[in-house]
Length: 485
Length: 96
Image 1 (cartoon, each protein chain N blue to C red):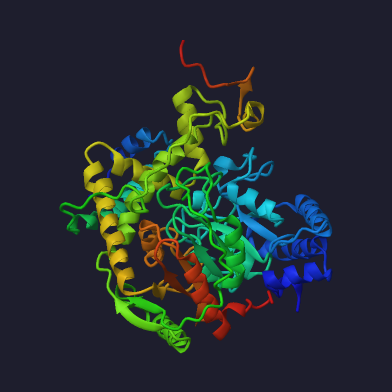
Image 2 (cartoon, rainbow over the protein chains, first blue to last red):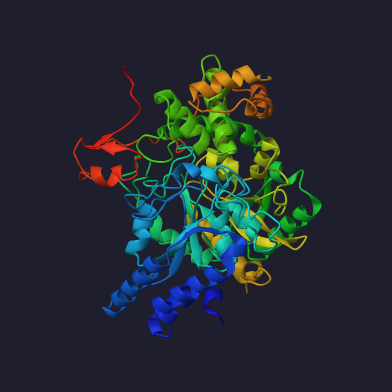
């Protein structure tokens, strides 16, 4: 089997047996990137020299007796994570010239584990988008159909894993930005519990929703990768001070008696072919011993409007740091300080980012705060309460990740609200801080679709276990996009 | 609720966002649609509901000891600035 088709565990075993070195493995993936990335545009920056140097270090560490599940394994970081000495653009003209002066904790932990960064993945500008079309560096193309979007905002991370340019990648998820592209590209992506993975060095979008996670080809691979980045970090004040679990330990646990709740509000209006896939997925879980029932979360349909108050409000505050003074884009020949601020921001940010900053500024402005922001945080409380009640009845919730498969590049970019509705099934987990995973569950029109499982806080292990058992009984996750096998 | 180009001007000024005249009606139309969309929240019954303050119930943000933990990397950080001089960030003259 070609190196790029192997799982992380298989690659680690091959490295251990000396069948391949990390340098040779890294070169193999770099060769794939140089051959395939031109058409996909999945990476903004390729760090070939640093990758080969890091791989040589990993080989020396192994020769010195060190072991580890990611020692010498290549990966791609979403370009939202600060990487010391490497441009960190966040998909924006604003940070096109920004060389991060330190590593994000996610980056530092993967480095310490011996993982080898191949480059930085393309993304929607400042992670604001569901199609990767808002990137300053141009859209990412879906490996399953180059005329389709890969989803967003972690679209480059998802397309890269689907095209087998790396065994895994990092991503971030504020309203579905790991799960939605994972679904549309046919890979497995997990958004952990809010606070489970450090946000230190991860460029902020909406601080009460942002969470880092991983995309990989299987739940087993995702479990290894997530294990390396999860855990307490004193440098992030929202990091949860609780030890991280070994997510690989319980992967094989039988699902007998697992109570899965189909979310009524997600399944009512499903397009029939999507509905048939979800029904077949429920059958597969029942065959594995799970029990299924339907649960209702009546406020959940309000999650998208709630999100489009809370997220823009927080973004307008977070992005005020980009002022053209200390870092980032500065306009030419500013007349005065106000002109410097306004033109640097006006020219440095793209249209969607400006829309969200203005929406956030509006809902937080005098006279509107109670009607929008306070109201949204109340509805958010209702939604979180309904999730809590649901988890009294079932262990995990299940439903589709997206309403449709990947859509055409350009199809929705001019209509923000239609674009926002892509995240209708994913946003609820962010509002309530819950962990959720998307895994491939079949095809519509030859394009991959995802099933989403949502768990109570800190149930990452259970989610990975459920999907891993599903993936031992099905083969959707091992299908490769034509031309990328 | 419908927003006008004038509303957009005011919001853009509050956010210190330079936008061009031809962009104003486009943003006015976009923002009106977004605001109309989020207006459906008004229908939700939220009497007596405490607004969410933290996604993890019962958790509050930690405090840390007020100690210096970072090294002085000013020079490294200032390499990302457009204009610095003698360790200071330069901006256009503010006081005549």
